[in-house]
Image (tube, rainbow, N blue to C red; front, side, top):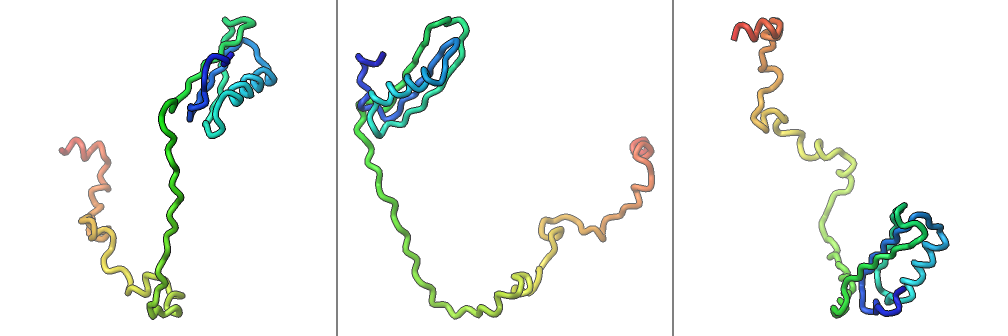
Length: 137
């Protein structure tokens, strides 16, 4: 199957197996063959499609990527060191909720975004049914 193809340099391999009727044993056999021909660090994804028109045949499609490209060196993650804090925090104050520590809300939500407060809105117009309000307009 893959005797004439060199997959040693491939970093990614996508395999699609198409068959009318195929068991797990055949699926695993194709997967093992691909793993034999691929390099150890290659990412291999194998999928299967059912195609009733194939009869007893099995069709294997292999897509290999990263062939001929130099391997990318993976850098070790950098450890972030935190500087110890030397603040004089009063930990007894942290038992209070933040709103109380900061002196409560300075402004309510409606005034902050420019909307009218609920107290200022006149709701008397809602006493007239909607169809009558539309006729009056």
